[in-house]
Image 1 (cartoon, rainbow, N blue to C red):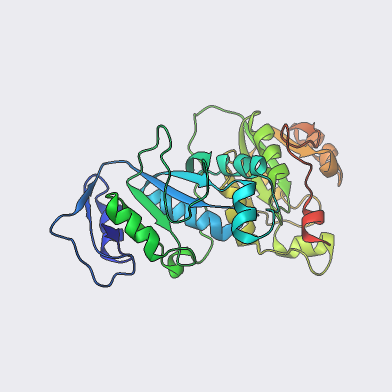
Image 2 (cartoon, helix red, strand yellow):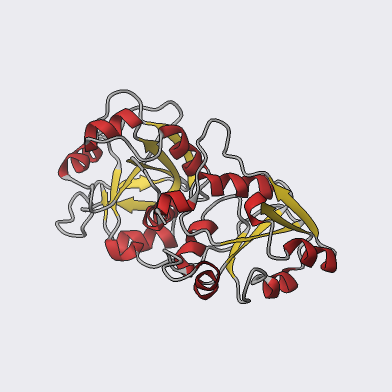
Length: 312
């Protein structure tokens, strides 16, 4: 009733329609194979945690969990985080819910109901998970016991499977939409970035061109960016409103010129802070519609800036 990081993982990827799951999550002491759980064609996977200040590693975990089926996140409330860690979360529940709902690997999100019990999964209407996905830092025998007693598969991701920042493939979507380009650094992705992507994607398929490490240093100085271009591309490309995330190959404020020439977009979208560097004149010259969005958070959420979050 526990998925190993070796053969069972590979079998589930090769034959997702019918998979017998048995053994322990670390691949040792495999037992119970004579009475395995058989997974349906599309399993429901549940993960549980605070997901406070979401980073690339959190997204890699969610992406890997999604290989087993539709991922549902049971999100700890602010009170739960305070109770378990002794301090309030950096980001409130509403903001964490908004962010997670925007991740392409996540099918559903709900606040953990009632009192927190880190080794148990509560009953949630409409949720019928077959797999509990976990990471080594939070996995324990209590969760294994719960899964064993409730006929769930318990999968603990191996740390090496979460390494690296693979380039997300283009997000599937309907054909015939306009092409929209946006540019930026996206060095500490927060709910404000997600909101911008959400609004920009209403105009068409959003291609987000991120400044290369070299160009970000050129424009912002030493110490920037905080994260590598590959990590920034991975995080932004994980947002469901982004058709594709790209790394620019040009230089200066118009560093996305080579990508724009290749993509041939209909629209170039910026926020008020990004309305500079000759972008408006560039679009006029090339016949590209230029749209400036007001910088505003999603309804009910606080305003965020990467500068404030980084502290420099």
